[in-house]
Length: 118
Figure (cartoon, rainbow, N blue to C red):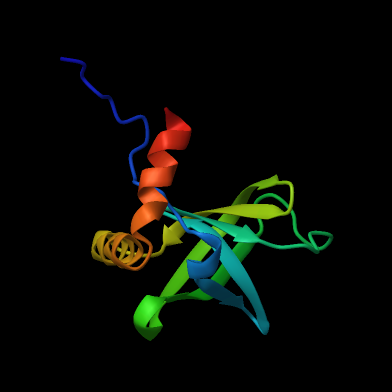
């Protein structure tokens, strides 16, 4: 039997394009590609005014119109995505509910991810 060792402390939920939640920073709304309890990956095309370490506070809009206040700072940039490390963000309960929602609404999504990883 092969033991699987989790390399990350927090589970990261990557969203299918149709199910991406949004996040609001000030008056701007962005799509979120990935969420964990301590981090978030956000699609942002205009990165000119952003820099590593910049503090950000916003509202993450999860399915069923649930809003979660997030606070953190920019960790790094990856092409047109900004990775923010969170001091305050979604709870474990939020993560489980989001994963359940994706599994129920997009049942083939996780199966496709498993075959891509293999």
